[in-house]
Amino acid sequence: MFKKEFFLGSGATFCLFLTIYIGSQLVTGQTAAQAEKPDLSYQISGILYTQKSAEYRALAYQAYNLARWQLDADFDKKNVKKLPKAERKRPRAIVVDIDETVLDNSPSNALGVVNNRPFNTTDWYAWSKLQSAEPVPGAVDFVNYAVAKGVKIFYISNRDEVQKADTIENLKKKGFNDVSTENVMLRVAGASPKGPRRDIVAAKYRIVLLMGDNLDDFSSAFEKTPIVARFAEADRNRDLWGKKFIVLPNAMYGTWESALYDFNNGMPESQKAERRVKALELP
Image (cartoon, rainbow, N blue to C red; front, side, top):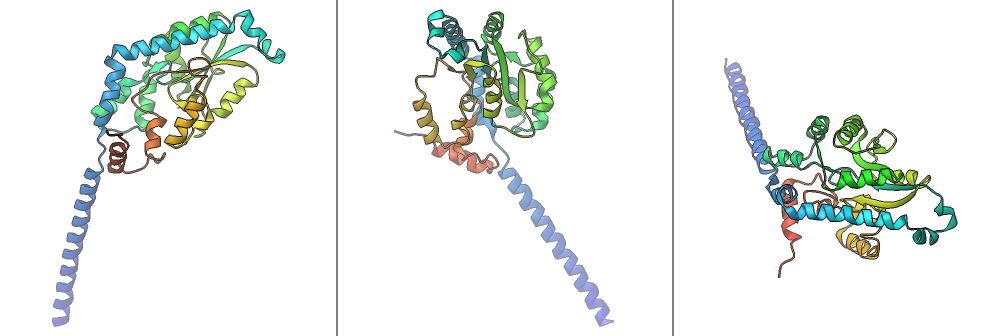
């Protein structure tokens, strides 16, 4: 009888401690989850700058005006004579990024902030399926101007290949001419570097201009490169900005932010917040 009571009592005690332990772990887990819940409010200023500042619109128009002037200059006979003979007869092409270069996705970013949901493919695919991203100011006029002059536009984007049909329809709905499966070149199987896709274009065309909101849109030298090196590379190419390389403004997101986290986007949110504060230059 003693042994039976002992084991029954021990079993009850064990179950009690097990219940307490599991409960404590659940509470601890919830607390940790709450502690790591992302605070995306720091993105609000960048989103509002895109949506509500006339300065953003002015910068976008400025970029596309520059692009038009440089394209016209390329059609100047004097300019063509400066090119190597092998290049003179090659057809012209312009390479443009899509997101925050020709299409404005700020509503999607705003929704993420309001719902406190970091970037994820589920929300991103749902947004692209709406096919409702508006054109960046000046984008439609410039692209169609270039197409009318016989220039081929290539849209090289790190949108995923599964978004291709929706992306093409979005571009067409908003008035972009000559958009097809051939010139919309998206990311395949997670291959994010754009260099190989630019090389495919360069094999058949003379790339007159590259346009984007992220420096990865212009050169592979910027991909997963530390901040100091990115500065140095930007300085090294100083004569190309505004000529062959045209940058669109984007304060909402980009490789510039990933560089703050050493390109470890899986870093805990609390550490990311610390990195952002530590990166500030103070007087």
